[in-house]
Image (cartoon, rainbow, N blue to C red; front, top):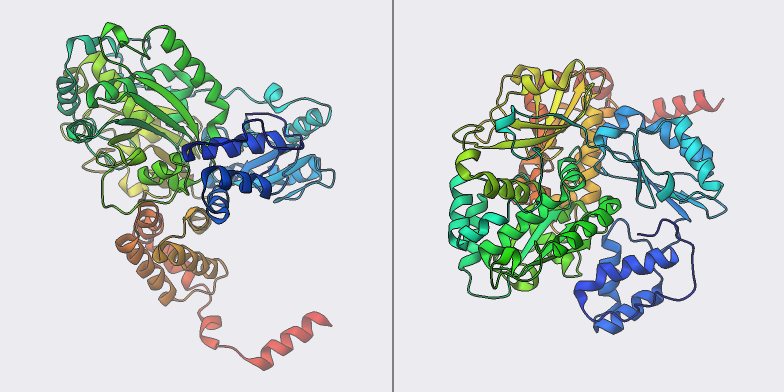
Length: 587
């Protein structure tokens, strides 16, 4: 992506868009060329695709990072996740406003700097963090912000002065049990395919017990088998690299440190199901990794690890390309992601068909996340029997945890399934842990009374995010941050999600103002249960999880914030008192 967005006249040379699947890429080109998307760009696109202006406008307006107004030569997206708030978001925001002259949500008078808040950008181990023209700037403080802005004003480009993002791999199992973060040599996962039929590859994956690592935990081998058995062709392998769950950055580290392992895992899946094309759907926040991934793809082609007759297997043709998202948490849901790939709004589909039946372009499609494909590659390299030697009988293998928050050693921890919460807290040198959020805001919060619980599918599953908060952090402020996130990220398609998150946020505002009654606590719980039962996709169903589990795990906290001022709550409204209060402050 361009690191400077100087407005230019006219649209990019690639005005003609012939296929709707190119729509997101087209608008990225438009926006990178002229700084924003104009009405005439939408008109040109609607005519080229023969769809209505309103439909194209609906797609553009759906995505957080597409803009219809200029956002400055340097567009700053400052992360406002809960970890960022804990680490100094407000001070960094004020520093950016002072240095640039822009206020949050706007552009400075010169048009040089735009300053906007955004949700988690996958840098929770390096907070506070921001993207400037989508290049990463980490561990921010007031002095660093002042220096960055000064250099930009002097003519430096964000690409030249951005931070190199480190891969903090803090801990792995003992040597023979390391699965993902062991040394990597290209081709070791694909080479064994010469000795396997597609069916035997699927059996090997099924034997390993590998499940989807994104949080749904569906058996990977079974999913591949379903896709292989579909008669329709072509078939597709889609990598969900839209790692949007706040506090999660494990897929970022895998793609940044061992991108070839991901490509091999996708290639193994392509061989198993009979697909010839793979697509990596990369979240916009990770666009700074796009060149590295593309370079690895091209290198693999030269090594004959992608392309035709891979590894000398006659007729095994498979290639991989990338598509860039545009900012929508809901696109982490596999059918919303597929809609986005097709150039549509990233709204979840009705669950009439599984993607393995009718996925991308209504063809049989396997959708797995980065960690799942990487694990599949290691299984083919090391064998299912080796994989089964780690973890527990119900949860074999290892898991990557993205650890952040109140700990001295944030970063990536590869653990065996079955490791306890207490062991993770000890490894990361947690700072007086009190409230722990497992699997991100859509997961489950636990108290220290549960520190002996095992991180395993039959006890405490974890999709990847492991956020630690000490007693200095207000539980209510954590939950308000989560609810605000889900309210903004809801696609708005179903009423329980659209209305439920809004109502819950207003109720939490009452709690913060010490105006809540016990009935408000019960009403919040009721809305949460309605959402879990009636929302059409995982976003809505899991949005109230943190709140509901917090009420169960920290009942004394909610009792305290409800009962702080019972007299005020029971007194009701008095016009005379209100007028008297007004006169007192206005005199």
